[in-house]
Amino acid sequence: MAMRRNNRTPLFRVIFFFLILNTFFLTARVFLERNGFDQSVLIVGNLIIFLATFLSFLFAKRGLMSENHHAFVRSVYLSIMVKLFVCVIAALVYIFMFRKNLNKPALFTCMGLYFVYTLIEVSVLTKMLKEKKNA
Image (cartoon, rainbow, N blue to C red):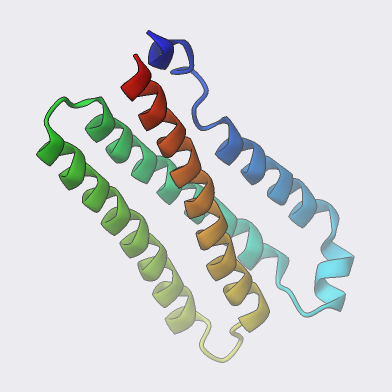
């Protein structure tokens, strides 16, 4: 029953982080450009990582709801692979399209954001797993 109570907003932290980052990226254009960051790369990268995290979370959550332990493991592996491949493909597309005008600071920042989003996602899933065991 406790899992149902929090079922509406398990991704609140991820959504909040996404909104805070995009607000910063939109309002700090001069600061970002002065420090060598491409604002559009950061905004699009943040959006892609957010969407990949959201999709990954849905796969993992579906496995978490399953009573079959093998289904849980498969869904977690699938969620990791989907998120990783979506982000790698997006990075490769950016690198090949803008090879000469590649903005490395923004690209490396997006790589860091990938890890932060993953940490947030894992903490939410861990909390949901603990609530499921106590139910």
